[in-house]
Image 1 (spheres, rainbow, N blue to C red):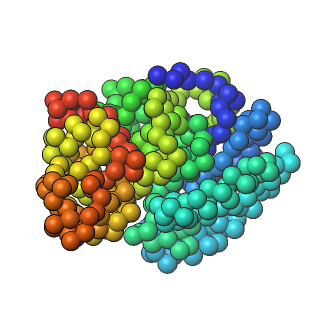
Image 2 (cartoon, helix red, strand yellow):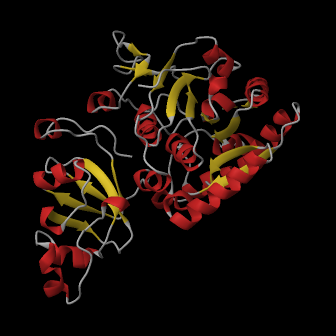
Length: 389
């Protein structure tokens, strides 16, 4: 397991900042906190670290500017608040960073920008160019156009996707909790703090609670999801409290935080994109024999597939589900859903007779697949699922 190290020894760091840290419901932007954060960022940049910020707060800041009443907002109210808040948020970041002669660049993403391969590559190129010229990308979900069906819904997982997209080696999630506990600490006074998490197991996932703040749409659940995306790609992750001024300095000086170790065998860039997809187009349910073959590095053959779910096209990302109902891998489908159903459970030598043409021998080729669970035996398959992303 890679050991924890000083922040200034990382090459590229993505910092996610929760709404409650930036915005006060009554007074609006917490400018003193933001200025202190930007000084922290400047200090790391001076050490040669690339910094990207995934900043929540557009909707919260916008509704504060518009003086909207408290409580749940309708979709159009949220989008209007985001339209106002994004301008105010970008201006605030730009002004605070400029005090240290740092240029900020705004990037607004939707789920599709990271799920669709071409748009993913375009977004990555833009962000990398900003980093190349020394700017700090300020990234947020484009809440003005995203609807519930096509959105991340939280910036934890968006930050993890940005981290994997840009090849970051550290993701820092700053929120109103200082790390991972064995149970929600505000509900269980006996909850134990976990300083180091070597691997995200089902037991770790079970410790995730709900959102702890009115302004936050993500809770510990989304942070663990983010951890699975990031660590699979070889990126370490830290969950820390941002309630204090200069939270990055606080982490560096030993403040309590939880560190998630990166995978020792990170997947390639292309497979990182596959593994990080949040919305697979369908599912292929497989038997124990197929699970064993996949764990041995082999392709998924039709004979090992027991059920096909969903409507997907060749090249879409699909989830591979083991016999106990847990995801074990993701990959790019070699067949459309209807063709996949026709050859399910059949030998590869029968494909031509069934479909009328000589298709690929594999339902999903191993080069188009990434394991998202570390499974080494049948008994472990019944109890262990470590990392779907």
